[in-house]
Length: 275
Image (cartoon, rainbow, N blue to C red; front, side, top):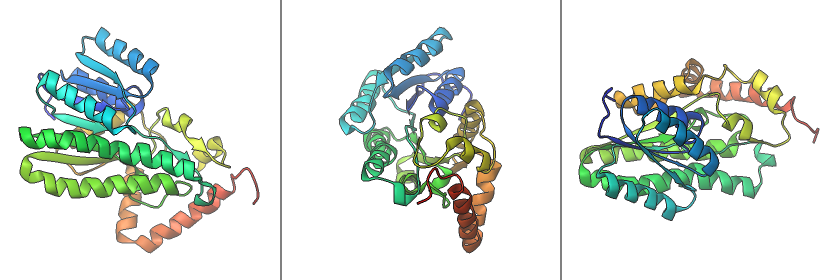
């Protein structure tokens, strides 16, 4: 991504906080026009005000990515008003940290609706516009849990594996239209999702102590993401731990599953019941 983004338009869902906000800050510093979307109206307005105070040009829209009509309106309005869409970051997400035996259908539906359908809605709205204009870059946020087995993240990981699969097929189909596709697979990033995650029969503080690696700061994550976008990388992995675990799973899958079983035993020590 060139340092001079003047005249270019970037849509970011989940743009009010965490990685989304950090991406907005980095893109703003490069002169891009931003369209921020988030379900949290109060936080969105606060973030928008901070960016506007620094001279950033942006629109801020309250959007629930579970609603296809809202996402379509977000994208189509931006295109109609600004004349182009250069980037869409399908970044909004939620997490439920629970063993599959403790995961309710309500949990499954929430994760699928936000993490998978939210991405589908963004792609479905932006891809036709990008095909017609002959350029654009779709960046979907998945997770390390979308690449490797993750203890107590079965349902979350399932949605993120789906995002990786969607993105890989879209990348090969979209290339002939001039449209690029990347998938972001973070490990631990110090964002509000760590606090907003629903933990089921698990102690979050205890889990953080045994989780591999330390969280990185959102701005560092955003810079790494944009570096990957600039280089048109498909997989954008954010930490050395994620790189190592992904390579292990690719080249020694049985060993990777063994590491996962060890993680399950460690996590079960932190269960808040004994069933």
